[in-house]
Image (cartoon, rainbow, N blue to C red; front, side, top):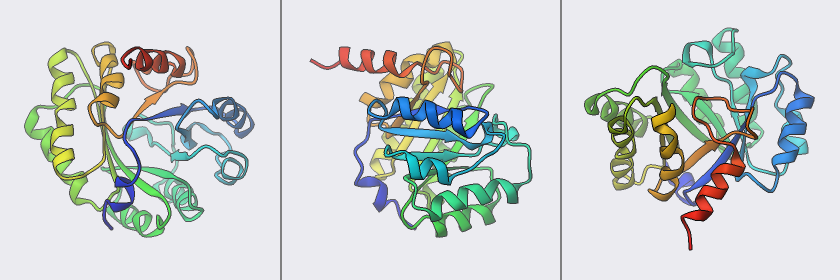
Length: 234
């Protein structure tokens, strides 16, 4: 598996995360976002009655399916077989993207990469407490690049502007290797990185549907993010 599929898609995408407890509510929220978002993330771990097919059949915007476990800041409480089954279903159905954690079982990763003949696999790593030092960040990125995944995602909690710069500079390494990378920071100091990454070669950033729909600290509403992005461009 190589990164060739992903390199044909322009960088700088805006993905809006939808986390609702019911499929009908999530579908309604996603419907409102069509025409605004480049990608819509369906947080399967937020759904009490998680399903993939209704979203693929009713939405035209490219979809990203995420089923985040509790051990990486998500809400899914079942076992890995149950969690992976939904991601595999999405990949086999040809969704645009599926997200799998770097720390997930290697067997599940291999199975998902094999199933994703028409989908792009995002291999993600999150730290909700801090930003590691340069050596640790470089090692995480190296693991992602060697994994066979189409795209890497590396997101940390920033406590200073130095944290933000350490994460954004990873895009230099990724660009040199032609590896699409999603890289930004959470928290108040990291807010600027959610916009800056778009202008610095980042593959994608994440936004909230509205003021009350954030799925991570510092996530901006899509309307705000679009307004700020427009202000940067003459």
